Figure 1: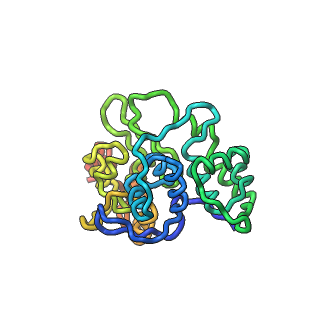
Figure 2 (figure 1 turned 45 degrees about the vertical axis):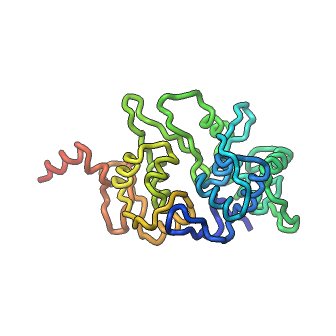
Figure 3 (figure 1 turned 180 degrees about the vertical axis):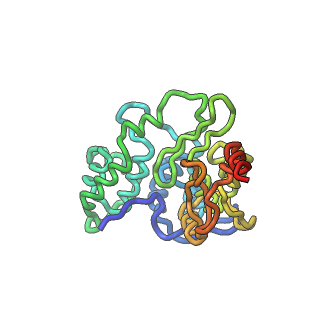
Length: 298
């Protein structure tokens, strides 16, 4: 039996309602990987990227597990053609923890078995009982290869030449690469559906809008305004936290009854709305075209 890998699978990790308090003493799917990476000398930036969580969350888990604090150096990426993109490290960790045999992981990532073992040693991933290893179904590997895309495309996104419009490149919780850019002619963030969904997911996880802005290198005023335009519900102040836990966000989103809806007036514009709620986004309603059309109708 095999499953598609969400970067944070495992039961939702309970977190405290107040920012700054320690995470409860409970297990987390990636605790063994975290311990191995810390023992191998990887920094907070590398660990948070490989595991798909914020640096603050990594430091909380380090505190809970009683580990030595990792260094705060920047994540180093290699630029040669066969270098591993960060998204492949994330998927390697998932496949390894899910008990995939090295040959299947190698096939899914387009790598050799030796390279899989080499990166496992480099990351410090845990040993696995041989009786628990398995080969996933062939169609699962094919589907993953299609979803993940080629190594060339991912590598190009990571090491493209310096661009004055580029703000930051991050790895999302689902493993996708997100390029955050600003408009060339104005010093304004270029809001895309992927970026809109990223800040929304973080807000659903009760991450404070200033913490979202800091993680994405965006003005906190821009984040707050955009969340309002996207129709995100308000938070109770005591529920806000500094770290980002995707599992918490998914559960809160599921209970809310909201859905990610395409605007009926402006195609390609998405926003959050209750099942029987608005069908036109606030962004569209603020546009001159919408206002003129609305006035003409009356």
